Length: 119
Image 1 (spheres, rainbow, N blue to C red):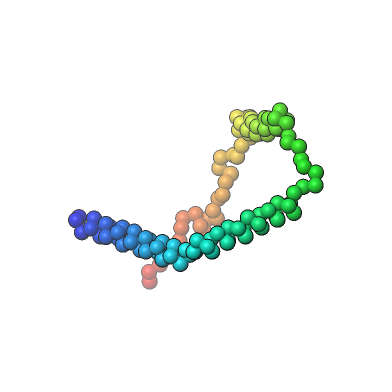
Image 2: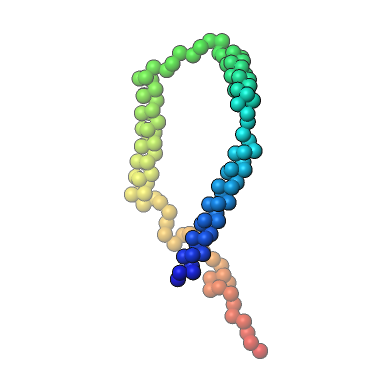
């Protein structure tokens, strides 16, 4: 019993050490100098400004009024509730799947493999 716990503990420690080692190596490999990081950040900000200028709509959209948005949300909920009620009504009336009408295996498959004859 003690060996099983020791093996599990050893496996956990090895996994943690390997994971920490991989993280340290990857972190060291991707570390950039502060000057390079500042340059990359400046370029990213410039590109973001350029993208915003190009992507700005010619006619700004007005926000949708709260009451219209709430009415649309309630309409979606009502459609879901109506579908659920129709499903429940159908199941209560007994128009659901009939018992015994599901998959029926062929006769040769019904009892598994045929017994092997010994001669």
